[in-house]
Image (cartoon, rainbow, N blue to C red; front, side, top):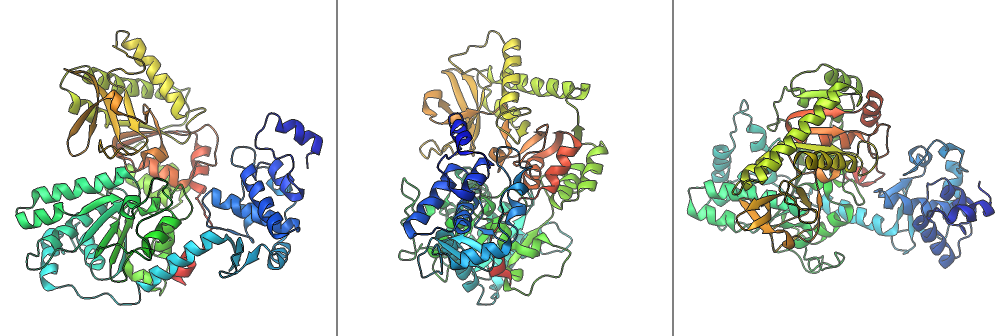
Amino acid sequence: MISFEDRIERAASDPTVVVEAPGFLAAFNDAGVLLPGDVYAAVGIAKLLGEEDEVAILAAALAVRGMRIGHVAVSLTTLQDSVFVEDGDSSKIDDLPWPSPKEWFLAIEQSVLVGDAESHRPLILDNGLLYLQRYYRYEKTTATLLLSRLEDPLSSLPTALEAQLDDLLSSDKQNQRSQQNRAARIALSGKLSVLVGGPGTGKTYTIAKMLQALARLSDRIFLRVALCAPTGKAAARLGEELAQVAGDEKDPVASGRLASVNVSTLHRLLGSDASGVRFRYDQLNLLPYDLVIVDEVSMVSLSMTARLLSALRPDTALVLAGEPFQLESIEVGTVLADLVGPCVRDRDLPVSKSAMAGRVITLDRVHRFRENSAIAAFAAAIRDGDVDTAIAVLSAGEEGLEWIFDRTIGAFDDLLDRVLAHRTQVVELACQVGNEEAALDSLAELAVLSAHRKGPNSVEEWRLNIEGQLLQRFPDLNRKGDWYPGRPVMITRNDRNLRLFNGDIGVAVQTSNGLRVAFRRDEVMVFPRSYLEEYEDVHALTVHKSQGSQFGEVVVSLPGTSSRLLTRELLYTAVTRASESVVVVGEQDVIRKAIEHKLERASGLEARLWE
């Protein structure tokens, strides 16, 4: 352990060093495992409750750390193997003064910091997992309310509704829509269903057609339906799909009913205030809907799931949809992965007898790219953690999938030329008055995705390279500040007045009224630059920012060395943003480690639902 004097010296240049950290906390802080917030929280509650045992205080700090990086709880038996240094060298983790499992449990069982659900102590130990009190309550609430929705068996659908589903989603098993037909039937037959599938498998389409079938039944009152998603961008996409179906519906009554469906973010559905902490709807003021559908559930945190379930009437039907193999919520929890459990994760194993098994519907026929394409094969190998197959597919050089494993070779120079040619085309189109739609179409043809915001092969490196080249090619661009025709931007905060949402991508274009910024919703929208409040350049973007988007060609730019951010889920998400072709830029060892590095968050929800 570093001496006290050395720690004082380090603290002068390193704000993560807590000089006054006691005992074990000091060693874990010096190693970069615990950050100041983890240390101060543990020391604070220990002083408040009179806890002096160093092992118990260390456990509290690691529980706080776990919550900070997305864990619902920490597993004491596997804690040492799962800990890493977030921004540094993890090689010395094993040299830290780790208590043995026996020491962990003995200290925690005797600690005044640990209690049961009724004690209001800050920590709870349950089934080998150590929880912060708040997240234990969220998990128990979520599990209890979900299981209560499985108590009643699936009901039979009215014959008229079955006929409408068969008309809109073929029941012919040879037809690619038959999976979606079955999914819609189950979703409308019970109080809980989980619709999962990869990108382009038609989850949103299935939801829209299911609502269209309900809307066509003119002999009954249309259900009060709420459609929501965790982000404004995802909610807008849901609304667009539903609006398209309503526009195609020849029955004016059904069209009107579909148009009346409330589409919003999850926060807005629950009536969040400006702080995002207080909500109008809760267990004392229930939502007034007969059917609630939530899309992109992989991005929904445990706390929001608990709040939603608490605000639903017992007779409200709930449909949860999402992609269980892509990146999880940036907040705490792995709700969708826990919901689908072994039903999707271990597809070759016998399915549990849990009632959850009959409520999980998987769509596996991809419509975004060809089912037998190289992209599909590569994505499937990543999803399954099959490193050798993934590398073999990547090495085969089949159409639609290219691998550049060395940035010093000519192939990388050719890629740069291709990216710059694409951006040049966007600028040329954006300079022409009246070409807003063409510029947006061109922009969506190619995207550069990176794991990191800064550093080698990062978003920032690509941005500087592309902008520098564009300024050389177009020295006469009419730039005002940083604005120029062809500048691509992404909205970073929802603006309900403009109908622009976090993640929306637009481009600066020349118009008869001067330089404006164009976006596409269900139509092209053009705004003065001054209307935009929070945005950033997107010559390249992080994989996290790309969630929910689709591009013709995707360049996946990986760091030169393995990184904690580089996981199987991140690589899968990046590859599946493409509809036509993918270029992977990265060394074989980095790709292998990414596929092997599956994101594991400690949670007890799956066990509560499936066991």
